[in-house]
Length: 190
Image (cartoon, rainbow, N blue to C red; front, side, top):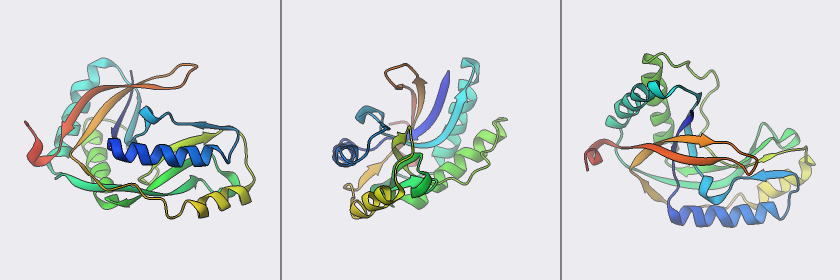
């Protein structure tokens, strides 16, 4: 099973993100854009795992969620990894809720490490991937687009849970199935 843990944008946020995707896709060629149903903020990519490890993953998610209260999340702006001149990934950042997302990711990282999962060596940067560039683009064009979208913002939405997803890869792109949803703090058990 190819697994990851993520937060989903609200339906209203997905609509705003789809508008951003349309604007960006009209300006860039050679990009594999994320389908609207695939938009998510990855907290931890777990990769290929045996089904027998699911109880450990879910226990780790439960442990991290117990310390979290629901929080407001707002996506905004656009950026690229690693840089405009060598862009490989286009993303939308976080305008509100970045501290909470980073804290949740660190709780997950610690809880999963206690179960024997390898610790991520790279720093966690909260973002929502919009597309992946298949070939280089002129850096000036990328910089201009990022400037044009600097004021982009979704409406804030309350985040009450995180989800464990299974990713199914195919020639038509990735399809995601929810394995388990874990509610935060006071919402647990409801």
